[in-house]
Image 1: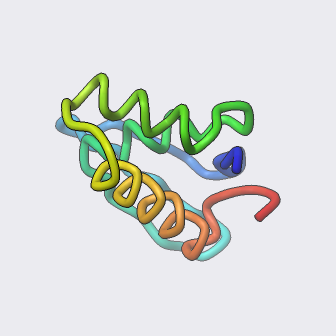
Image 2 (image 1 turned 135 degrees about the vertical axis):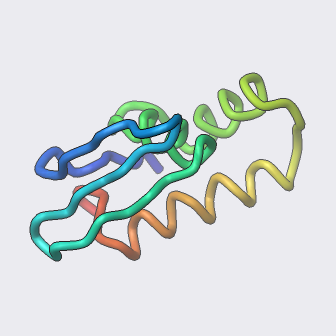
Length: 86
């Protein structure tokens, strides 16, 4: 899976966290540092596996817990309709 963030949302960084404004639904999503890191890698060419490896390298850790967390965050982005083509 190669998640791709929607290009029609507005993103701002505030105090180290990302705010994602979805004008379509008139909702603002506040992403913590890790979720923001994952969001920035949802470019349509980076796989979930590569995102997982990047998260492990950036924040430490390895294995199934990180994979599960990355998949969960990407799934939340999908459920919130913040990704294209899924």
